[in-house]
Image 1 (cartoon, rainbow, N blue to C red):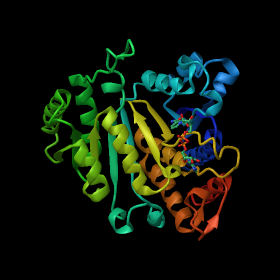
Image 2: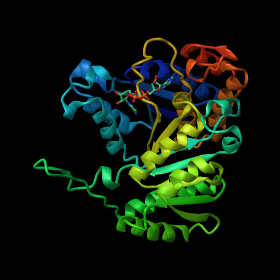
Image 3: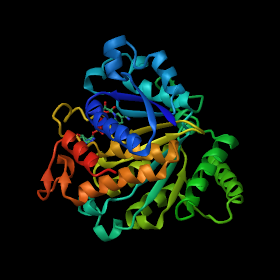
Image 4: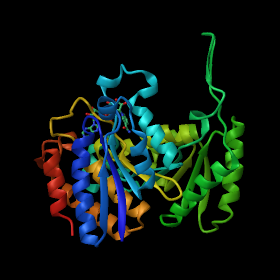
Length: 353
Ligand code: NAD
């Protein structure tokens, strides 16, 4: 079997962390007897510098043809001054739109060796295993009309179509079937008609999954419950804006931004990237944590290729490296061994297979 993968290293620490993730990707494929066809292209600021646009059309087409896309991060102060229509972030939106990745999956599960790295008490987070399933291509971020009128009002539109709610709900229930079979659908149905409709459709979809428990929760309560008792959650299903906020909140249960992967899935294609940005403050110093990007490769094997054993192999190597006390600067607390970005990649490679 052969898989076509497009890698976009991007800006800042993006190239540093994707280099390590690519090594893990290649080794995993080798151990799993999988052939890879990997193409690497500039995106974001790097592409603006080279071609004057954040993403060339031909590279977007290559991403569309690929089985999976791995992305580092885009942006940085150097490009904050460019014209808004060609800002680095435009490349991300174009990719999501073209790949039709409507489901953003963000797991938040602390590694036992890092329980002390969270701002919450270890006993509160030790059994946390949350998967946030966020609708990514609809809702208020895309609704029209939108704008600012005569310096007098600003407005956006929150719209959800039945098919958009059905497909993200089905994705959440399918994933819950593979986990603890519990979906918490988060909305604001006491105020918003869109949320009332969301709740109705989610209930309809739930009827097809009698083995999965469904709860509904208002978003304000959910924000509080994630801090109060995060282990009550299994799958959190929610819309674009609520998911944006709640998934960042849930991610902090696990400590460092440098640890957290994500997958954005369409029906077939997937875009895999760390949740962090390009971290210009530490770029080029060799101290960035590559684990979020390496764990994104683990998600690729699981969600895009359904090769769970290979995904587990990467996850186990990450767990071992942390158990053995290796730490990049962001998770170093004075104990264990401080390692660079490339050393962390190397040590994970050694623990695979
Ligand atoms: P950031 O995530 O880049 O950095 C926030 C903080 O976390 C910084 O102190 C950084 O050093 C640290 N950090 C992040 N990743 C780390 C890692 N792997 N290892 C160690 N420390 C890490 O967020 P920001 O500073 O708000 O944004 C910087 C740039 O990244 C901006 O241009 C922003 O637009 C862009 N950005 C891009 C994406 C993306 O490409 N998906 C996401 C978020 C931000």
